[in-house]
Length: 230
Image (tube, rainbow, N blue to C red; front, top):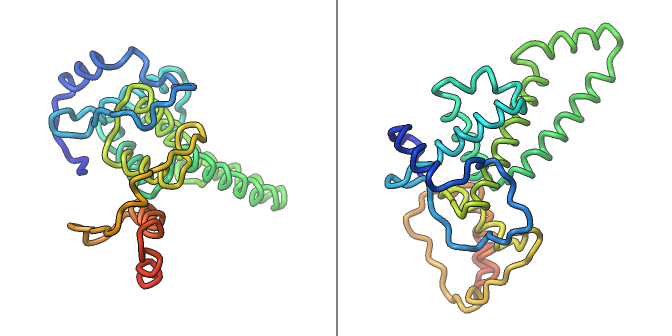
């Protein structure tokens, strides 16, 4: 769903504050809410997605957990940029945890690269770290995006909310059997499906392609279809 939607910030934040507790950053622990009916917050009648992300950024910034993003936190385009990045990660089939792990691996690779050189090269690398375009700065920025994404996902779970990209990512997790604190969910009706019709698509996002990869083998003759598609 398009993110280019105009809404009145005061109205959206007022609705959001009336439907959510004061701290949307709070972590949902031990609650199995993954498959409960959720309220979409990216629809025209309730466009609260960016307002929620904005609140999370403000709270994390105020608590000192955002360093790279904090100078940009009050700019108009910051929330739009973060919201777009989170949507891209969701459509790529990446959870906040998976994105954070990828950043950690990249950080380890960067550390090994910086540690391998001589002292002069190390000093040069330390100078580059201070550069806003350095790999280190990009990692810091991405780590904070991962944190915002994590808190956003937790807020959706905690308050029974969703958005279109989150729905598709959750669908992928369900068909893979890896949602809701490692609890596995069965889809009994799936084995009764004899025909899968895909209508209105001209291409697929990575997460949609992954969903099909898991769905097609469950359908009669699906394995043959999958081999032809590959």
